[in-house]
Image (cartoon, rainbow, N blue to C red; front, side, top):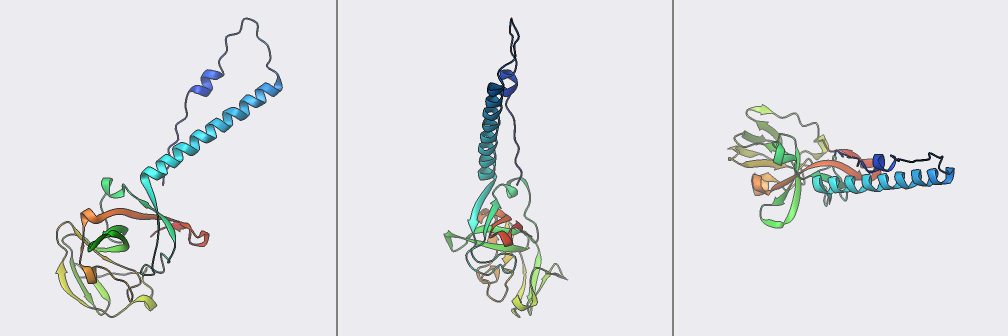
Length: 200
């Protein structure tokens, strides 16, 4: 989440005076001008920052526990809405997408397989292109022993899974997710305070 602040030239223009008879302004006037200038700059900064945040990011609320322990039920977070307009979806990204069978619902899961990946799940262990994933984000108590037959992830689709494997409904159930349904990347938890931080 980056904010770019651009100052205006108004302040410099206001400070340039052409007086025939220079004199010192009363101290109260100088102080008032300073306060007004500071308040104006603060308001401009807040408005610009809010606009940038709302343009780049969208606040969402997590409902459910399929992404424990990284995301908890009722966590509030910002998702980056333009991340995948300028960059690529990568293994391990936590993405938000429209549920393939009901576009009025949004899901949040982790990307496990990219288009063209050879993917297999055996007794809960995930293999991508023949290599078993080291999934430090999945605690042992959240694993399961499900198996899925080997598959090649179709073009323009992504295989996603929840971190809480034993309860998650994900691509093992509804299949890979089409690229067009993915509309954001989980970026930052802002509430509750004890959960605040970058989503990894």
